[in-house]
Image 1 (cartoon, rainbow, N blue to C red):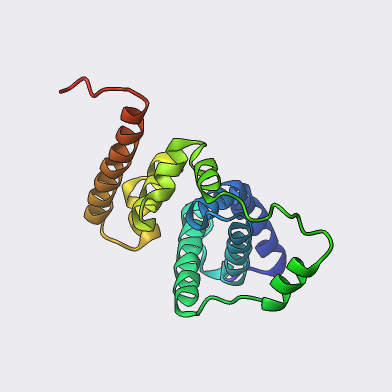
Image 2 (cartoon, helix red, strand yellow):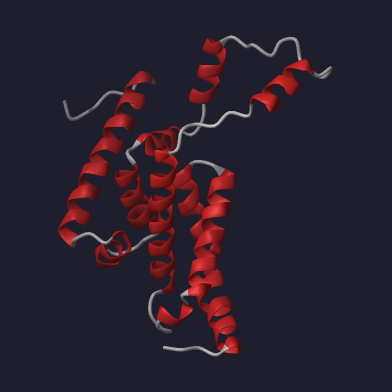
Length: 190
């Protein structure tokens, strides 16, 4: 399908833009970083506009956008994993040599580690899952996609979606069970 310029803008505004919050939430849960999530959403919408002629009006725009986002995330992840970590030594040196350096900059790592553990345990447990398991839980339980839609977004068979979701929920349950027992809750089924 070929859209004229005004039609492209209308489709973009009416079909794609209503999903921007859901796209950001999904991107954030994949990247676990606000800036990376914003970049990923921006990249997704740029690709969506660029390839708008391959979108069929009236189909599930949200699923189409999620698939673009997921593919962009995977591609970016592969690129980053092949690059060595970069450190700007001049920035580090100028920071430590500046007058505004706090003398207590080296903190007790035990305190810092515990501070990161305090928070929303469900989010922490979800974020601790492998990205494949985290993705199916986000798509199904948080975004409400059907198994068929998830299979298209993830480009995997529906049986794989079901088994991955089952395994992901069990892993999440185990992580939360450990947390609950640390608070003194006991499994009543035993």
